[in-house]
Amino acid sequence: MKLPAFKLERFFAKYEFKAPYLLSSSDCEAMTIEELLSLEPDAAQRFHQTWLGYTETQGNPELRQAIAQTYQTIDIEQILVHAGAEEAVFIFMNIALQPGDHLIVHFPCYQSHSTIAQSIGCEVSGWMGCEANHWELDLDWLRGAIQPNTRAIVINCPHNPTGYVMSRAKLEELIAICREHNLLLFSDEVYRFLEYRDEDTLPAACDLYENAVSLGVMSKPYGLAGLRIGWIATHNQEIYRAMAEFKDFTSICNSAPSEFLSTLALRNRDKIIQRNRAIIAANIERCNEFFSHHADFFNWAAPKGGSTAFPSLKRSIDVEEFCIDLVNQQGVLLLPGPYFDYGKQNFRLGLGRKNLPTCLEKLENYLKAIAA
Ligand SMILES: Cc1ncc(COP(=O)(O)O)c(C=O)c1O
Image 1: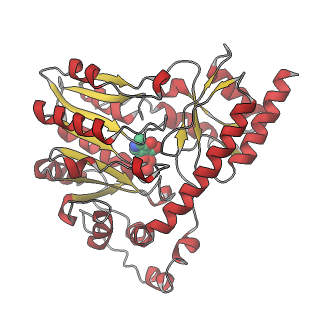
Image 2: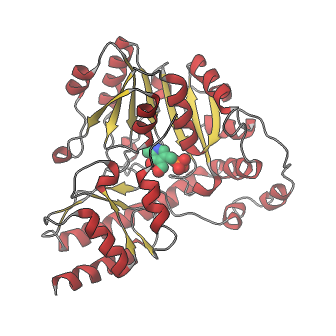
């Protein structure tokens, strides 16, 4: 299979480690190994004793136990740990889809949700969120888009980049549609637990539907992207077995130090998630202020969950030119919407990093300079 460039990753490869003010990252504020180990008194000693041989291909049982606790109906045999969420997306698409299959993808989307399927030879339809209505998804559109060769639906709530979270009633209706048409539901839940109100946290799709695959990761709610630990949870044994067999040709098994540190983080998940939700809440307040002062320049609506938002320019400036000039002039990195194949006005803004207020000050300087 030949894959085209992952546009967002190529853009980040150019700027992410050079630009001093990252205002478009999707992960939450990270921490050091030392900070993580300090969460439990004997953790440092246990970490030093971690055995560096091959690990269990499904994932360390203690880690899978800690992951299982984030679901209602899932046990450790239904969790398969991967090298980040990205590996799991790649493997799912490869085992679930055949050339000629049709896939419906929540749109705008994280590129691997659509590109891998297209590269396999599938037809992909974008299920477009309605920007004018808080990126709402329309189930009637979905019903009309299902074809005899539709194999799966991909959703992502909380959504990257828009921060959309569907209602529980909508999720249940969506699952009823999947059941009726015998469709797989790939539910990318990597931003789950970053909803701003507890009542907006959806049940995991795998807890509601026997043919759903839920995707989770340490990168986003836990801010531990460098561990490269992600997982799927599913009741569908056929999908599980096929993914485990495919993984023998990719990462085989996971990094033992990362599994240790992920298990530690998950045992302390409430503390870490509360810290990250507090950072996001403060950043949203700061953004609300900033964008209300610049209502002539930007459209802004606070998202409902996750660590990203997708505001837009009101001016008829090309957003990519705007972002590139901004990073060159002030070192502030925003991600242009065209990297999500969406329009020419939107850009992704990251809400999970502590230095967002400084980044906004730099953005303010830029706006003053171009207005002068
Ligand atoms: C929606 C979504 N899914 C999957 C991933 C991949 O996560 P990771 O890079 O931690 O593997 C990302 C990363 O940005 C994402 O936003």
